Image (cartoon, rainbow, N blue to C red; front, top):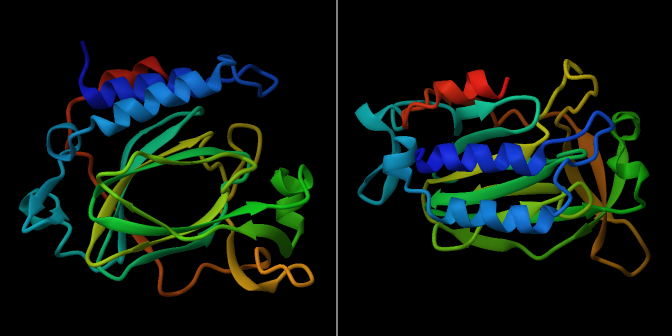
Length: 246
């Protein structure tokens, strides 16, 4: 039996494997997602990922995190053409700006601390979920949902190509970290055959008459206050999975 993080990787690859035409190999997506969410609920940040606590705050061994200057750090665990899996670590007061996940499924499991997630679902499908259309459009309409406050005690949050596909994530009352799964991964250069870039947005107002839920989002550049550096994975050995699934 493999480690818990190995089981997460195997289940994620199995869940989101696709045929040449882009459709999922495993059609019972809800069953597979429930199994994956249960595995994520069992993840131990220290044993499974190399994350440890210091006075209730997330840190890496040797205090690597607390000595860094970037507001957000990313620890890549695994990535192939099917999924990307990693951990984001946000310093107190940090926020990942409003951004999209065109054509992707996503799962977010908080490991330490608490985050506020403000999510939006694009309107006028399917054009808004098409990568080419998103690259050409400077504005999109989206339905804004109430802010979700998510802690390590909560089950994973999810997004799909059509639901909650845009979001912003900010810390609450201190630093926080979360495990992030995206399927398929971002591919800004189209290396795998289809460009999937990350676009940032600003909420610029109501997108319909007398309807504050429908918002107009304007594509913008990445805010100068946000940048991300990288940290090395320190959990159980998973090198064999990189060979197996590539």
